[in-house]
Amino acid sequence: METGIRKIATFIEETVIEGGRKAERPITTVVVAAIVRNPWAGQGFVEDLRPEILRLAPVLGAEMTRRLVAIMPADRVEAYGKAATVGVNGEIEHGSALIHTLRFGNMFREAVNGTAFLSFTNTRSAPGALLSVPMIHKSETGKRSHFITATFQVADAPGPDEILIAIAAADGGRAHPRIADRFQDMAEMEAEKAGA
Image (cartoon, rainbow, N blue to C red; front, side, top):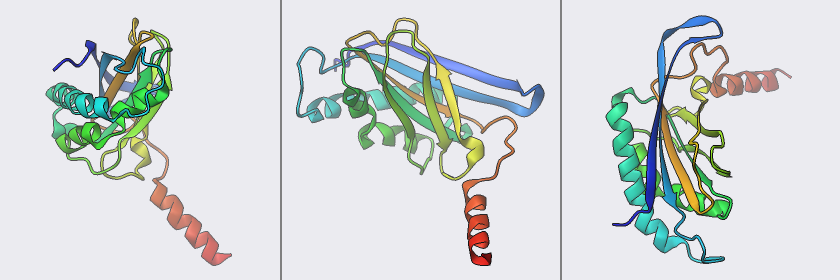
């Protein structure tokens, strides 16, 4: 099948020292980014995006997930997320179309035994923009230690008629987490409310 993939870029980052202090263990982050031709480019406003979603999203999801778990096996993944950025001739909806479908996200989520939604960004950018993929814990959505972001750039992407799609995973949270989880805040606020 013709997917329009021009390039796939993979980024691996290992954080050893943060804030001047050595991490308890290195935290590894992996990003897999696919740069594809925007399937709606040059067509003007397209009302029904579904045919291209059904054609491309499952193939991209499978290939990108395969590449990511080859680098970071599923049992190591603790946090995950996804992102799309369209080139300047595209609509943000075009990038959203390819990542906001269960036919894309479920491949990644199921491969790493996740249950949480994949946090995300949808943007428009010029080639070489600094891009971010926000992540959360793959099953504990209130675990603030795993509210992290993978940042990367591809010098020549996305082109004006391209979409850059990325998935990211980390094998831990921030190197030195020192803030409470959402659930602790909620319990404290309820106790404060009851005591008022």
